[in-house]
Length: 420
Image (cartoon, rainbow, N blue to C red):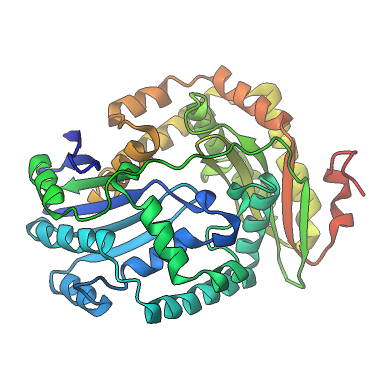
């Protein structure tokens, strides 16, 4: 059973009771991510992700680790473009401890100077690691080309220069502005009672009052057609795609089906034609993302440099075929079956349920039931998918490539006005 409430402190709470499990997962969702940072503080959300578990006024990082280890619990956090999430999973008997620790790190982080400097070094190493990984670099460059001169195009890690110049005062001010109950959701799933969780949160709340979701500017329509990074690698890494629909667009269900048919599964057109039938790539798939006011769909490929032209011809060919002819009834049935099973199988885990209801409440302001989601998926027909494919195929495309080539090698894939 899913229950929601707005607590007196201002936090929105959503819980899902799972009577057949003995665990509970608790997450604090902050509606601020990398797109909400000023350029000079790029990476601030990710910096805070690292810092909050480093200790509080009452607990050191070692204390937190020891207390969770003692009960077999685990904790972690992650940062996205539009939110930052901190979570803990432990036995339901230990829920009070979980609420203690999570409330402590959210309302009274120490932000000790020595911990900030230690994590600064860790994050700078993380940035270097991503730059050394060609697949990560291709994804980062594609995002920046798809949303040029907009925060959505920035990597969540920030840049080495922005991380180096961020001060403790900067971090503390960013935290005080964004980490307030009006910009937060707490989600709990597992062996729990909504009223008990609500009372526990209210008793432990010790943060600043108020707060609201950050104001955001929509990205412009322009994209950069091509980004190439020359690297003497043995494999070429490509990301190729276009803008897609935002998270509130009802066409998102059709795009989910389209994504699976194109490259989202083992039976998808690209996996079968590029890898299975022709052996042109070990890795090929498609993926979609939806933000508050924009979205994307991309094909990601790792292939030998000599196979790039042929792989891109197949990708472009499938995009055009889907736009012209749509999907077959069999493809439609397989995609719907996959999406249905993916949703239902994820519901076997308290952590996955905590994530689903928390993200839904934070991003949509409501939590659809599983049956409601299945109904939206089942309602998608072949016409819906063909129309989505037509929009995708006609949208300006962006490609990033990392490998042993330069921009001249891709001139044939550029619009005539962009070729050089």
